[in-house]
Image 1: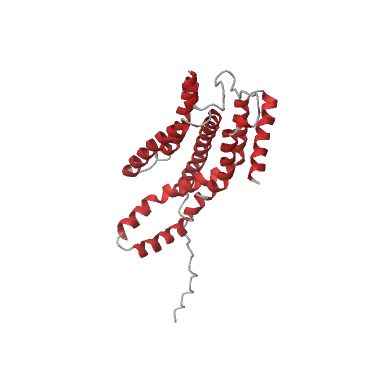
Image 2: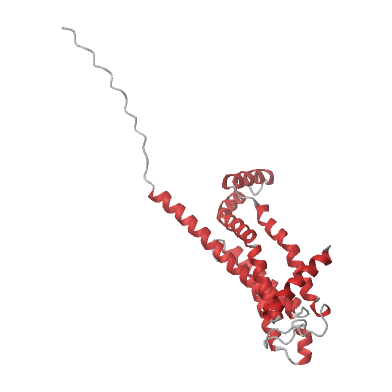
Length: 254
């Protein structure tokens, strides 16, 4: 079943290759379609991350207040999540749903060299072969295009993690995440050394499109938050004044 799914993905890439006449462009087109299809999931994931950042100061207060009482802290955290309608697990579900498609694409691009004989899998004149790894290109003396793909591959991992921390008020957490992003980028450079150029092209294009989707979603949410705050400030105070019925004055006795 899994091999059938991978064959289907390769057929889609080959279909767009027959239209545009270039394997690299076909990979980018398939990547764009893939990102459009999962955009609702990405929006939900970004929405969950944005909600988490909004409640982070409240979570820190609870951790400070009930740090020595784990059970009470857990109860208060659940109350907080219920009040703000935030589900921590909801942010992971979109990622889990898109992982099978992503893994299949990754494997198909890694196996492209063995699928069609006599094909160079060029990306115009920019990358001589999309099935060649940077380590192999280094031996052949055509290393520069593959270095660029490696930098994009690693940078596309570093940039989203840094952008998520720009609006964070916790400087310690922001610093920790930037260090983690740098370590992850170095790890991705190591992985890219023996990854086919087609995989690097897909990952780089997918990550850059993902960053664009994330920033658009964040702007929409921030605009919505600003409109809600403005509505609260402008909304006039309504005072319900109910006049009491006048009691008839007692008549004076003559």
